[in-house]
Image (cartoon, rainbow, N blue to C red):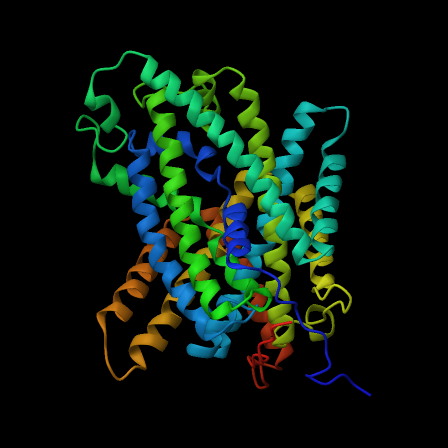
Length: 450
């Protein structure tokens, strides 16, 4: 006798509001601005703090749209479901396909970064050996279940938090113990009249927004969250605020330690050099912390990717028998976890270029962000009888910011992204015999508390 909707295993609601915020912070990384600090300092002419704060405000609009749509549709499909339900099923499918690119590439680039760094410290083990080990650990921890992942996230957040506190203490001792030229020294990271330019600050902001990419992964856990209609919106917005404030304080301290007027020995590791100026051992400590941060981010990204594939599989956008299945004992989409882990390993072995992978990731993420903002606009403004500005302004601003960033992606990312999207459209055409059949089933299962 086939399983009915009542007897089929479902995802377990185990994640609290705190678990969701921790998940979002880990995926984004509390050390997120450290890797782009040098680039932001150069592009923004020293106004790193300003670019981080402007980016936070900009991404909060998109976070609001995500939170509101998650309240309406507490589904693991995230943007894929929102766009399909509110705008058009075909556009929902296209959005989901772009998200697959984003979510699948995130754990892959984390495997690449960690494996490259580990190979530097332990060259006796080849890069491919490290890549296989890292991908295996990611997959094993996620197969253990969502509660285990939540506990691992808590431990990683505590470890990174301790290092950040040590950095702040060392930075404060150096900054306040050294000579400076008065109040201007402390305000230059916000505004330096000698170098300020709106074009430079906006250009830096377009990069600083990347610090926040990953907060949308919270919505993929809607079916595993306690009280998702309340906790998912709160966690999405609060994660952006927490990351924004923490990032601003981090780069502010680093900019005081290493003023923009002084060139960095290496732009990509600029934050590490700034930390080393406060306390020499931080050169190694911060470097190791970035490895840990990428480990947590990769593991969390694999979790989110598996849930996205589950949402698309259950909706029949992908083969349902494989991607829509739940392992009954741990009640997780185990097939998807294994699939993402295998893809991350293959990609890490084939590409081995962290920068290219990161650029390609943004293509799918920004399409999803634009889709969610449009879905929120349709549901809460266009279809509402009473037109309120509070329902119009956030999604419009969120959409325009994401569109501007998407248009400024590199040519390589645009070409590769276009190829990926064409492949998805071709698959959809084959699946529906030229789009004559039903493309997606967006029905959402009833909520469960157990």
